[in-house]
Length: 440
Image (cartoon, rainbow, N blue to C red; front, side):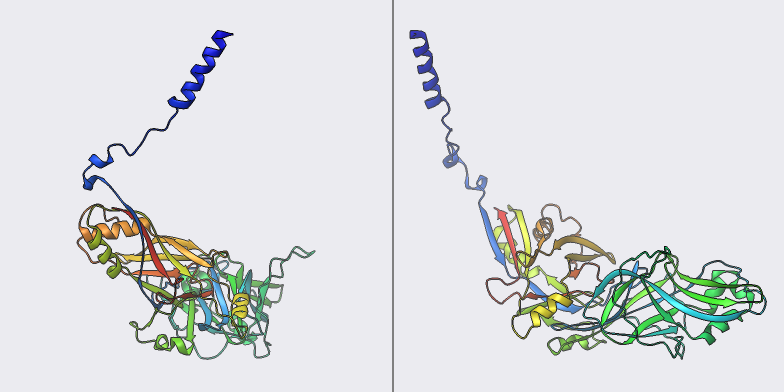
């Protein structure tokens, strides 16, 4: 019994004195000031302006947009596309005395659409010049076409509202927009010299492609243009048979996604097409619009130069975020309309130009709970501070060159029509800010 009591006293002694947490601050008073780091957080004002998206590559996207969308706080965007039509099989022979029965343009729906829909009048024209594989075409490019429409004069206005795949009993799909073309055009294709059909090169020399646009109506739809699902189909008969032949929009077809923009009066400076230096100050509002529309130009120079000078070289960025708050406008139904028919971009990208190619620096997904985008720029800001101080790694930024321009762009910009209005950099406590946490 005495042994048990003695053992319990030992355990109690260890619990009371042996498990005491040591004082981790012992010795701090003896360290030099240079060995002690302080953790601070600053909210920095960043210079951001809205500019036009003038360098978006239009070529070889997997889907094409057709239609027109009006964003009440940004403006109107018209979407159209140009594409080659390739032979489904070369050396085609149409038989004896071929007669065109009908010809159609069939565009395969992806099920994705934008804006509020009404009926559209569709225009199809022949390209005057070939699309060149080694040429750069921006989304604002205006291709020249031959005079005269290829559409059947009796073709009525149509709904282009997106239709999802629907397999019917026959196994065929109805998820197509079908436009009737002029039968005289179809007959002219049957009457061509057979040599033209001997290869795609010969065919494309004769018929460079088409431009498809809408001349009236609202709403825009995405179509599949890289799998031969979209095509021009010529129905015909000859003395022996009734059949059809396809001219395909395939993955090998050179194609362009094109957009023409007309902005509201608050953004009228950006309607001056010839002025690439045009911008709208970002103190109050910032505008981002896909479809070759608007992006943000970000200048970190002033805020980060001042931060570098105040901290010196002995600092380390622990966290840096550019916080972009959505501007909510209430009243007159504007916000409800904008949210319902003009969804916000699912993500925003921060990019910069490096040797004539775009480098992705950060991605921010839309946070519907906080109603914001947050770009994680920890590594980028550290590299820029090192660039200014001349000490440490500068990452993708060469110390021998000027810092590149930074831009914020919407995701999927050449294949969607989505816009968002953000709070500016000098509005209130919820203004767009760069928040940096650093040790020094």
